[in-house]
Image 1: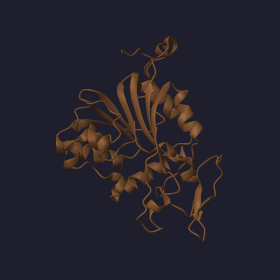
Image 2: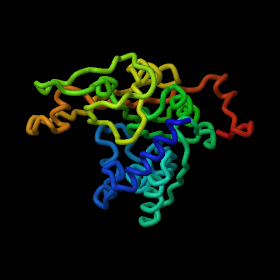
Image 3: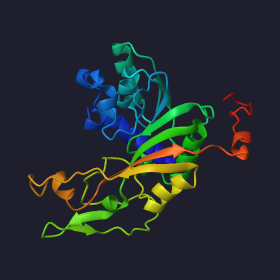
Length: 270
C-alpha cells in the first residue's frame, strides 16, 4: 500500500537526519524511567517483568525507558532507521529489546494475549483507518491489559493557513476522506509523510467498540503566552494538537477466546 512505503521513506529520512522525533533516552531519563514515560500516573508503580509493546514507537526513547524500568520490551515500527536507534541504544546500555519492522495495522506475527501494556505515541494519523489497528491491539493485549495512546486532534489537521490577522483558518472539511492535502500551515505535520484525519468518533468511539474501556482522556496543553505569533506555542492557544487516552482491555467473551489462534492456526496458550 502506498501510504506504507511513503511513510517508511519519510521516517527513515527523519531518523537519518537527526530529527527531534528520533531523540534517544538520556542517562538522566533512564534514572527515573517511569517518571519520564508517565507524567500522568497512568502506569503501574512497577513494570518489572511485564511484557510491553511499544507500537509505532521506534527511535530509542520509549523502548529504552521501559527496558530501564525492567519491562520485557518489543518495539514495532515501519522505519528501519528508527528501529536501528532502538537496537543501538539497547546494545549500548546492555538491555534486550526485540524489534519488529511492520505496520501497526498488521501484528499477525505476535501471539494473542501476549502483552500487559501497549504504549503508542502519535502515529494513527499515518493509516487510513484506525479500526484495524485497534483490533490488532485488542487481540495482542491480555484481559485488563493497558493501552496508552496519543493521537492528533482532528481540528488540528483541519487548519489550512492563517489569515492577515494571524487567525487560524479551518480550510479542510471535517468529513474529508483520503490522504490530507498539502497545507500552508505545516504545524504538527511531519515532512514527507502521508497523513489522514480521524474523527473523534473513530479515535474514541472506535476504542469502545473494539473491546476497551476508557479510563482517562487528556488534551496536552501546548499553549504558550510568552512566544511570538509564528511559534507553535501561539497556535496551541487556539488549536489543541493532541489527544491522550488511557484504555483498558475488557475481559474477553467466550467467542473471542475461541478466535485467539496464531497466524498458523494453532491454539496459543494464555
